[in-house]
Length: 203
Image (cartoon, rainbow, N blue to C red):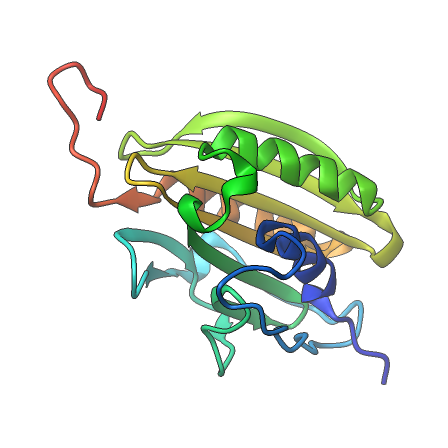
């Protein structure tokens, strides 16, 4: 049966963060083979969430509990990967000092990634600054890769210590609406425990 490589587009886009494969972990991750296109999937808030806790950085967020961890990660610069019947989640974490081309801010990173996605033929339908429930500023992106029938959300965040995270969800376009609210929940519940908030409300 024809298999949808859910993460193929995401892997190509995420590779931009490595400066064309020049990251400290430059090995190429294995693509994720998932269920045939059109396979029914149920992903939603009512079905519960699990908590992602970074092994190397003070980052955590909720993600749909139905997504299962893919063995073999970390690899290729990716901290973790999850999937379930056509829905994929990829997580990249890095230090800006390892990726000097991005200038050291998450806004510059998002701008360059956006440009790279457009060059790959992926339409960025929305890009906006948000604030998580715990007060962290982040950037939220919606994208549409029509050629491979994939729609997705990416969440970009970088802290004052120069550590950043890129959270990417992808799903076949016909089931993306099931993923939208859970992905937004991930953005809202993102937390950076290293960030101390001052009396002014800013780190």
